Image (cartoon, rainbow, N blue to C red; front, side, top):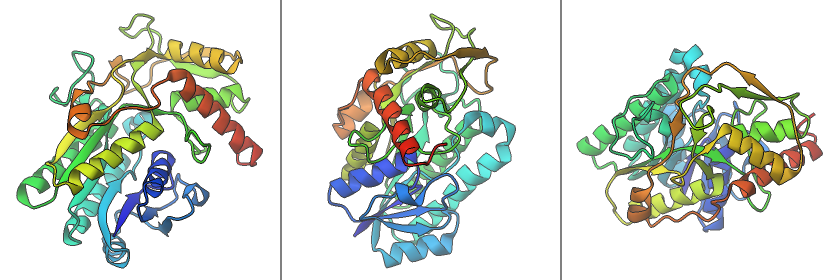
Length: 330
């Protein structure tokens, strides 16, 4: 039996593959390599180059590799891009997820884990925000994730299709052993962008918006280490294998840092000062998003192991240096 990881050549997916292999699982990856990389898929996993929306390919993969569980990461993730091109995001994130769910159901999959997002909450009235808060996404990206959650909920009610949807907050850091990290050419995650600025890959750090309703005027976010996030998926898989009920849970640490605080922490941790340039707000960015995390701790018995901002920024900085040394960054 094996686990199928969609988007397993990308940032979070590649860490998931490592976590599964480290746990002794058989792993196959389905990725169209539009933003991921062949070399990011760890040795020991089987890479199938293709699209999650290709139901024939998904069905054949389930049969050929004796797949019992699917962990679904594949999709588009840039909030501002979704505002500019909503139909593309709904096609890639919603329509293709629909196709994948249908193929998974036809293939007899009973364990499905979905990569959702805190973007489903939009601009919550209270922080930390818990899973029972109203869903009111303010971007097509958030809407696409919400719609996928709805499909999973209704499938589970109509059929035997247990699932866990994990609502990520801001993912950061890199594999502590240096095996994986954020490798897209056009990174958008704040800490990875700061790493590129510190290494001279960008001329300055653009700070989008200084007039938010927060203590220092910049957005506040809950940053979770990518390896802790991968381990949360392992816990979700164990929960479903033990015939646990379908569930939707936040993934974060329950505390937030402002953009200014992250920039200061980054510069102090790596000992490099860089130019910061203010810019207008980006569409679709809420003032503050901090996770309520009681449910994941109690239901999955998940506990973070890498809850340290300084560690996350140093790992991102070191990973960017590794990419430069390999000639992947110029």
